[in-house]
Length: 315
Length: 298
Image 1 (cartoon, each protein chain N blue to C red):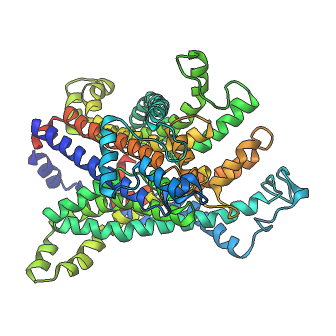
Image 2 (cartoon, chains in turn brown, cyan):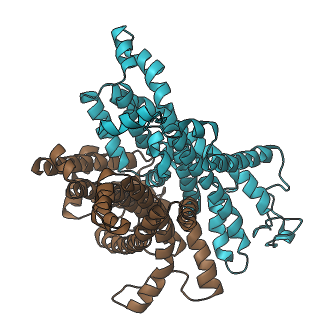
């Protein structure tokens, strides 16, 4: 158990190190001198030299990487080349918004998907089970931003029940905060619910054929009781995997949803920074997103050991 | 335990092989998913082909007098804010969709499958190194990679295709590796090794044909993912650039006319959903055929 934990942690750190190096290298391939991008082509050589010294771009790449990494460890993302804004508070602010959006959407998705998936599996020969499987199949194919656009059209523009977008901090006005979150959470959560429903259904169907479930039934447990007592825990492993994969996908997918609903999250900041050619901001945001993805993968890895004792021994 | 089997046999009842129930029946009759998926993809492909030679209107020609017209006999899906025919644009948009999917999946197959086979045939240090690299790449989802590439090399269709392709490599490497590990345990690979066949020949003659089914399934799944991602990128303005019609950008442009001209969102939206649904169904249907284990659970 301890060995498995250590090896997971080691792999996490190694992945993180290589991934940040990759991000750094990728963004330094960018053609053009950031000093010229920041100051314009008419800047004097003296001004350019001063800018480079101020932002440290006159150092060697290795030194720049180490400085950047050192900053990351301390939570210091540096200063934007374009807006001269301190990136750390900005990113901390934006990442909260994205995490609230993604977290809530995942909770909603799970609340919908787990019962529906179990139902679809238990009734897989019944018309209702077949219908659920069909609906989730279609749901998987619909992009979340299309759902977002349609929700805005119906519930914001035509019916006027909810605002079409924007963001209010929960501390400022909790009611407005929730009202503005309803549509984006449905947009992001419903597609995830469809995906997770399919996996829950497959996992439960698989479990229903297992010997231990037949034994439980033979002991006199009803179908439902046997499933709850013995089945769901075993169906947990594939479901946790897909929840992890989908959490990572949602983090990235929220980039588009934030655009639809004008939400000031990390994704909007990323797209804006790409548009402004704000190298350091892009670098920092991508690093944060990749870090989150790797952390999710680590948590999934650790969840396996908790859910499936067989894996504990195998390690 | 064996007695129950023996008695049924002695009574003369036919005992079907337990591992592949109904195999022959399924072989002869393709599943509904496979058929529906294939029909949807064929439809998209047909539209793309036809749009190469014919569209009702020039999809990029702006006609000021025809601005924002509702769907009619003249313009089946209406016109956009520049008076461009939406139906023609949706038709041409299918080309970009298929090309991006094709190239992205192509890159992922060409790089990922050989890496996966290599990792499976050399499970020692080399295999470990390949799969560690794969894990690192897994931390960069395709859409994120495409946004970064857009920042570095400039956004566009080519950048998107390459980034989405690289982002899909891990999926193919994993599938190819796990398939290869299974094939390497079979008797015919032992026989080929005993007969001193080269590793390359074994990979080509025995491994590749045996894992090709899994690869095809993965292709279909990733094609759907690439279509979604391209639409998302174009929606963000980081994919296909104007004036080339693309479903994602049409959807983005429709946003400012929601409420008054909803049809602008519906046409490209349905197009994206049909294409993705087609590839997903095709993937599921093919998996049913190629992987008996998955068969009855879908």
